[in-house]
Image: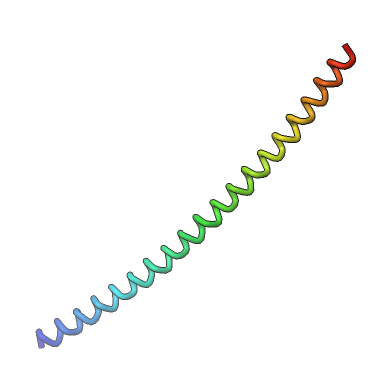
Amino acid sequence: QLIEDKKVLSERCEAVVAELKQADQKYSKKISQMQEQHELELRKLKELMSATEKIRREKWIDEKTKKIKEI
């Protein structure tokens, strides 16, 4: 009977280990997807910031040029 109990426990342990491996793979995949999405969002935000900064700089240059011309 002890051998049978040991076999049952061993099977349960193997099932739990397999379950944990599946969960680990699932969450690892989800984490990598979230990291990729985060990097993409950061890239978009940086591009938007640089475009906004460029427009602001050009506007500032135009204003200064007009002031200089007026003077």
